[in-house]
Length: 332
Length: 134
Image (cartoon, rainbow over all chains, first blue to last red; front, side, top):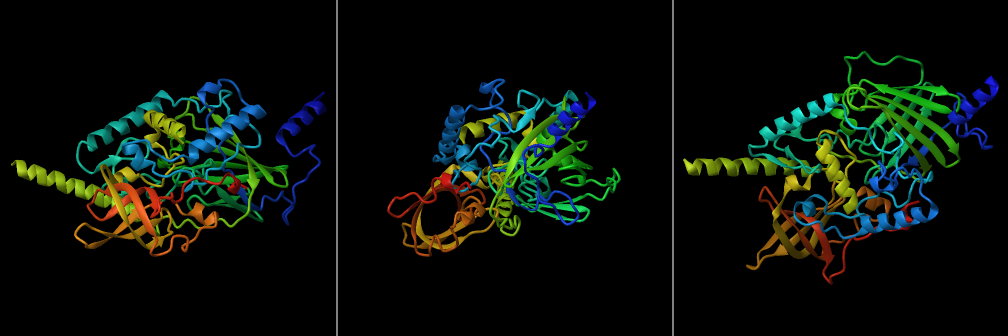
């Protein structure tokens, strides 16, 4: 009975097991994930509410969803007003994928079972509301503009701009989530270390697998401090020590991210993650993406090298402030 | 995309303002360009900059007074275009284009190129190729 139980557990843990396929090995005997992988997909992060408890598409539904997504992403963008300015470009400029994930799930989130990110805790909501109020007060003064979030945001100092505009992070690395483009990852392995080069925007995740402990709590990193270990065919990566500004889906610095990488075939790398952030979310949430092998190269992004837009954003805010000052002086 | 944007907007109301969400644009075009100042430009390409995080088309525009002014038009990210086989030679100098966009807030000759067409009216850079998704 115990043996049978263990067998079931092992089967659950090792998707490659029983599929008559073994992952190639690195020189130190661990499964090799080396190569370039992509997670681009039209599968939504969260299950659309109208799909209710439907976790998987039927082939017909998948076809209809795919067609609708392609038409939606390719159409000429004409939202009107500020939306035209914010979202001027259609899918020609982006590379967000045209296919559903091979698992045919209706969302990347697999737990909770409704396929949706659980609500934030009351404590976290209050914290965020407090920050929003401060921004609201700040933005009664000139030098604010509508950000991609649709909310007013300060834009007259570089340090007030969001992490994306500052080229620090596009929020696609922890967890590794698909975005509008640059959804490629190159994995390189060496003894005691796995490195993941993420095309969006430049981060290289260096994951020690030598049993070393996490950094002391006083050291915080934009993408956390990852530590890996092998469980058979699977690389398990445990990340802590995040900075508060990383804010995974509204989360805070107490984020504990657990990720699992497993080769499930010659061209598939199953990526599973769990976000455990008890001060920010009412319960943990998990997702999975069967990543697929893709042709390279992973392009350099050089996010700040050509970042004329950031200069223009600040110049626009300064022009706004100057105009307001002139108007105020005229009234006197 | 529209549905996606709606989702983005809905989530924004719930607190994505505070989070680094996977984005559809690198930065807020609305912070840079004025939605109340639409601009239509007709002219010829003088330079195409395929730079990340956004590409720029530079063009000469002749005003009603006959004076030629150089404008800069901000476009989407070029990484995708490289991957599709386009390069810096894909929009040669001298190409006649029309730009339908929004003026920069700082008063410089810059615009957000929301709609770019060739001189004969053909759309430039419109529509992705589903087969490109390998």
